[in-house]
Length: 243
Image 1: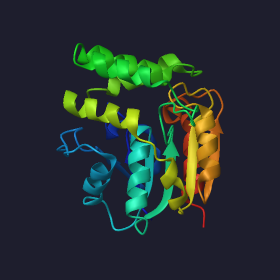
Image 2: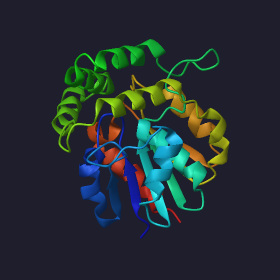
Image 3: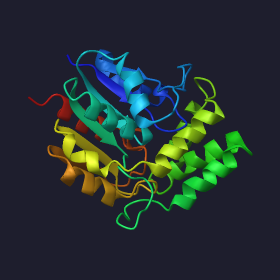
Image 4: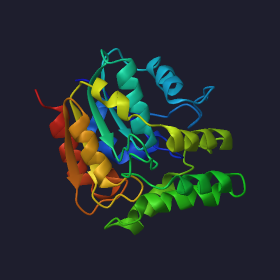
């Protein structure tokens, strides 16, 4: 069975996937990205360097699932190592998280800039505010937020420099041009109420991918694998087990 490598989002760690891993069993491989969970960081902290560093530790062939910032890392890894990524799953991912003159399916850059400015002033409060943004709009927002907060520091506290560098990626990265290079079967899973990455970004992504499809989860926000776990896992397993 092909292992499924699972990448977390900004400020979190691989433990965010624990519940899904219980369903998937031995095929799930939860990974802490560089700078998180005791994993040494990389410099400069770029999508390419993150992908290369992760690639050193991953199996010769694997399926790959990335959430939010982890999804941008997954896209980059799949572009750099297409012969190793059998199937790709992108959860709550925007190829460009902030608005541009030609891209409105995103949030205003000022939102992330404010988080970056506040991070050095009050580290913990800023992280918890970001989690609240991820849960906002969800049918199960209170439960999702409680779960994210309970997991937040379960594997230690990431260095503030790592968090700042991750926010810089979210602010600046625009992966739209690389999307046509991702030729492997790709499942885009997205919450219909996502406030951090609007659903129109997922619709664009699924259409732009050479072999992509969208599974929109009604009533979910940025973490559908927590709020709508059964539907998320059913869609994930069906996709991975296709022949």
